Length: 189
Ligand code: G4P
Image 1 (cartoon, rainbow, N blue to C red):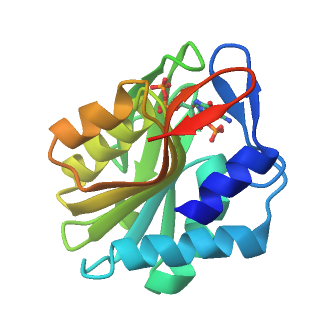
Image 2 (image 1 turned 180 degrees about the vertical axis):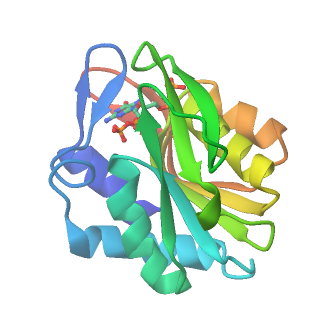
């Protein structure tokens, strides 16, 4: 998506460790008119899928998912990150081992909000090694819902997540895929 690539080139900042900061417009301060265009693009890319629910993970995915959801006219459910979980049978859980954040955490979703009747689109801001996305896919599978696809704003194509998700047969749409980055430039695929 050219609008997104242009914005990353204009306002993105590359930090040591192959981290791209986009916090001036996407995941800290949020440019709503701009993110609205991302929402329309997600709708266009998944227009033929019978989506009933958008699923994301706290924190940064929530705002983006909510704006996109207005074009799908469906609710947003976000997975909560939990340090310790009380397994009372009312929650779907999955363990996520984040390489990026170097920690392990559980994500939980109430069984009330994901059922076998649902057709789910997962939306998130970044795809790096894909651990968060794989955790969400695991929960969709446990719920019996149909996974219609995953929409990602920025895929770091030089990390393994995109390949892992596509190899699972998931319909993955990334609005920008970064091929490589250096201190001074970001190159797209
Ligand atoms: P992982 O398997 O390496 O852990 O990567 P994953 O794709 O699951 O992404 C893990 C988290 O790291 C995500 O945040 C993602 O947004 C963030 N992340 C990865 N690479 C970058 C990057 O280059 N720039 C920025 N800004 N974030 C990056 P999260 O767990 O969803 O947490 P939150 O930030 O939404 O709270």
